[in-house]
Image (cartoon, rainbow, N blue to C red; front, side):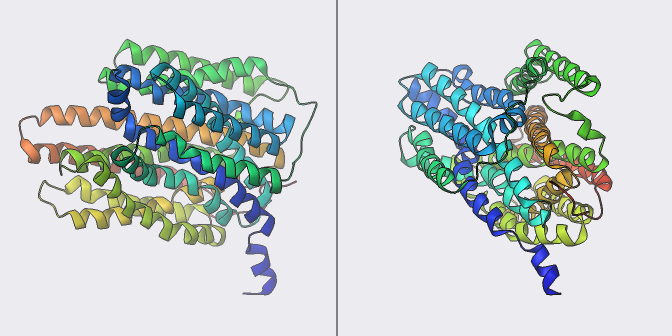
Length: 474
């Protein structure tokens, strides 16, 4: 390879420095959600509140996060990326400290809402600033850096959550965020560039009034599916229909209005971005939906405690780390489509052993399958995100960040809800069958996860086969 080619493919040192600064702060956000999910039962018992109340520790966070995400494109343009990032990180820090000191469930829920607002701003702002800093060069390897927290959070979070629940007071669930936030703020103040800002940028207030409540209503409806036992209940259908109507109204208005909407959904007309967005939604099914099943399988079929079940997810993280960097390199050289297809195929291959497993299947066989599954997941998200930003102009990047982040969040909620309902019905159908019946119920549910992966394989045919290297042009 010639030296000019090598220089073109090497990540810019300024990008690497910015990535290290932002990853330090964002690690608190990506681990927080999964750590708290592991600890919900402990929180309910120690705070003396029922499941219906303690569930709002998660639901309140997700609703605030969903409502904050649409604001990021305007905030970044109006005030500059550094200022928005530092304020969002400070907000998340304040929520973490408040949650750590909360005297009871109502205060804890309130501070979780504060955390959600900060976290909802941080993730898309990070994507925007890093993809802009990459400037269209080595997008695959840049994406490998951007996607790392989102991939590791659901895998390492349960391990950290299990360790805290087993050995420390519940307040450490939130105290653990503080060092990351403080270090992130110091590094951002010292090393982040101020970035561009447009003091004349106007807020699309009508769009905000439609989109933020719409996303929150959809997320709330999906969060109620498990408690309601399915989708056919008013507490699920009413918010889903209302939220869907608000989002649809926003989309129609955004397409037809003369000025710049809060989120430019017209980007979905770009074939590569439209295909990548659909796959971001389905990747929520593939990643987060199955993340519900795997620890439950080890607990309910294998009789493992929460800590051991969390530790058994670590091999999936090992597989992910093995393919993350090669996937970025191959995406730059071969294009998004072949890498995504290969990654999805490997993910399905690593999920099939769980669908076929019985009560007596060897644990080491399933651990090996998790390594394979993680390797596939590490090779899926990177080409999808790369193709989402491929060919976009500098001013389009914040809108792309909002759309992809929102679709992945809703896809994850939808996938988790669907698989939770399927699992509940399968377990009811195999009731009385003992460990073998439970294994069969989980096996049938894992086949649904394989099916979602196969659907994503079909959609991946619309990804670009080659990158044009013109993304995020200035």
